[in-house]
Length: 181
Image (cartoon, rainbow, N blue to C red; front, top):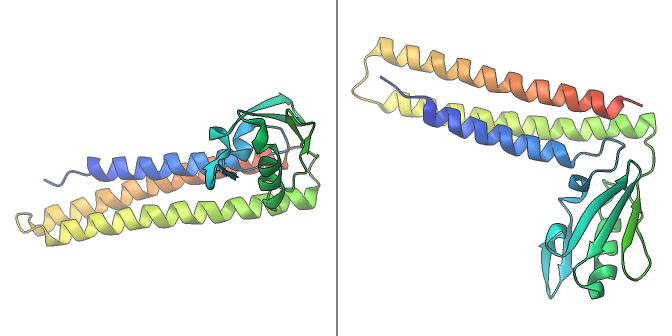
């Protein structure tokens, strides 16, 4: 009998990565995860923002960044400005950085949904890769009969559909959140 639990775990990993990517997508409300993809040049190397500063949401329209080392303020602000997909303009007072989150226009919301849809496609491609690896394993399994192989392929396809549906549901919820005024 073919065990698809290992493939299920791989697909759950794809879903977890997809959810992490969706957290980074801007929704019009300030959220510290918006900046989780920012890399800051500090101490001669690029480091994730959360390793050089504390990021908090002061309210729905403002993020406050408190660097662990005040000498990194300029490089943090520059890294945030450099990420054009966010469209943010940080301001610092020498101790902390304030990042006002402007309200989104409908055009900008549609652009954000479109960018998020590329992440959906990446996740679905990863699921298809897991499916293809599982199918190859079934095809080369010598000890399985043809009917067992067919059943295993059907189970793999059903599992892939289940996880594709989860991605679609997650994206639909995120799209509605982005488009909501």
